[in-house]
Image (tube, rainbow, N blue to C red; front, top):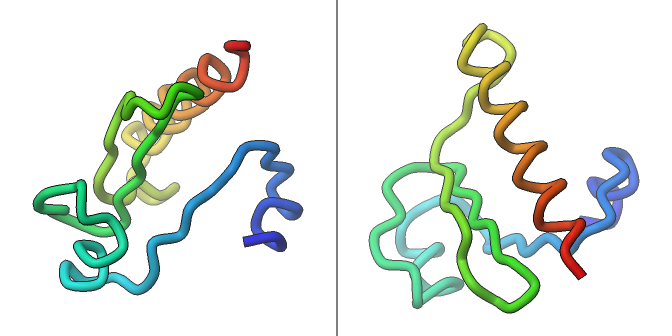
Length: 84
């Protein structure tokens, strides 16, 4: 995780729940019921509340979906990181 955070300039905490597969995810995150697809990103605010769950991957090849995802993702991260 350290290399990923350094390479991308990430200043917030990241939890890597392990290998893909429902049995691994359920074991690492028993509070989350029924992860439907991988990757699944769970956004947690400073108070420990789940603010958003995003499943799936929208990469550059998905065109407008990728651009929409980046805009929404960055706005949410900025909002969560800015709150004191």
